[in-house]
Image (tube, rainbow, N blue to C red; front, side, top):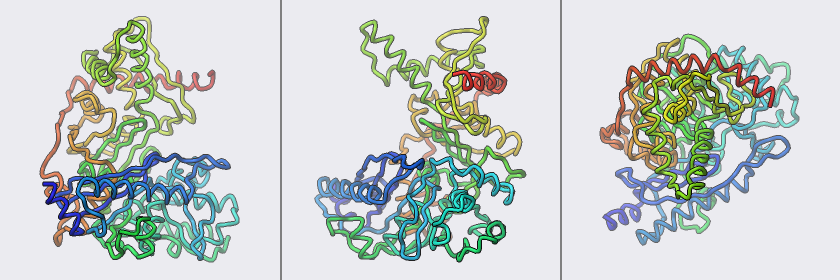
Length: 531
């Protein structure tokens, strides 16, 4: 097997995916069978400078080069091959944010990441003008806020893109974006597969009196769908990525995508009526829609898959942090008795205990708000646990309540999607720390969504693997082979993972818990004001 893989790499048939996440940059090399061959990663952190969350350009390039170099070293060590050629490369990164350049290609202001919540006025005005929800982190909200603030740099803008778009541009000279990534810059018209022309015209009217020497059409990247050629690695680009000088120019790049799109690819959830839930420190759900929603909802972001299908996204800031803090307390308790607590075993024991609890958690209530939660209208949060004297205060109910509340804000948004908008889901894929204990997080999400939830043994290498799959699709797809079909048949081979159907008792119990949850939000409000 090793020699086969060595030959695949030596013949330039391997595909590389690199994703720049908020804390890690990861490079994953895959073979023709889509299985990871080698990887390399680089840890990094955003900086808070002059009231802005940012990453500097030197940090971006140093991190990219380091992750590539570590991957190339692993290839050399494991397969005895020096990496010269590749079949394709793909780049992805955290979405949204603000990167603007002048006509000389110089960055006009430090990169403003998705984390910045400084565009409230712009987001509200654009949502109203477009009749389409524009979240604060979207690139267009950042641009419009800069205009409202009368920032000097705006008149000099010649190009606006995202982090993934910036890297792709520097390596290929092409100003393009994958449609999924583009959908976090500005609304997409799903029929045209491009930025929404009507909304672009609307924007030009809003800023007309400023008389800027540019229009959105001129400064925005070109939108491409998965499978299209995004450009070719230039000689300068190859030298930028691989400091050793071994990598050759001329390699095809797929359109740069966002972390939402690569997550969909990595969990085989790009087909209509499928979705995925990523649950860890924060939690988000993405559901691929059959048709446009009837109304605008501030709780739901509308983006697209890398193939251009509309996706409704519910994003919440808080998920497992409070639960993890309680598990930490139980560890401390065990250690006080001289018991060495294995964390995996402790999590598994407590999570499984939750399955013994009453379906509605016995009247116990918790809020996991370490930070604010826009879906329920909180700027700040206070983790809370509340019960009545007659509530059934057992360990099983206690852990169950904390597992339920980890999905409480998410369920608020999902109820709009599933109940108000009547969106149909055939299957949901769960991934992230919440699902680590077999069957438990999965059973609870199935109850929250009243839909079957699958968890795959092979969540692969996450988003970096996802963008490698998109690059592979570009090279290997047959005529008329959709991305959904390619993933289903060639990558996942029909593997559906372990599926858990919703249990009616759990579904009813979760709904009851949510009634308490909504009624008790005033307690959370009081805690924020008092503490």
